[in-house]
Length: 159
Image (cartoon, rainbow, N blue to C red):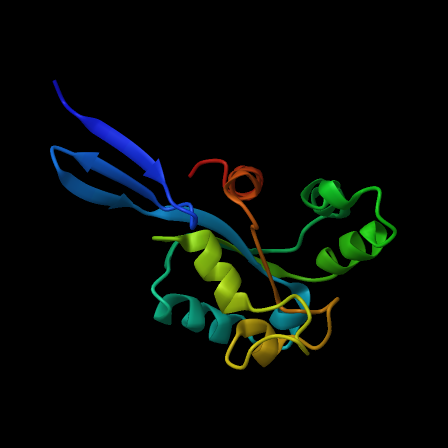
């Protein structure tokens, strides 16, 4: 009989122990380069940072989101006063949608992005480098495994 133990760590990396050997399973997350960063011609620089920080890009598409698709994407905020502003912004111009893969991808991507407010983001983070204010902060990233799964299914249903 094969002995298989699966344990979730705080970073949501899955470690599988098979016959006393540990195998780490990479994690996937969703990322978006928002219209402000695309318009400022920073998408390539952000992609370079993604790859130089050990992420593998397993899906990528440059597109302009319809208001309907943007509304589905931000549905979790539908009852909040800033919902319409979010939908209008993310559908205002081209975005780059990415499926990223790496051990601890969700936490790693959020760390690389930095704080939501570029003024509060740490030096060297994407939002500090390319964001201009909390509403135009260059990137989006999934905040949990469930969110990553939903967002990836919305934009990359074949992955």
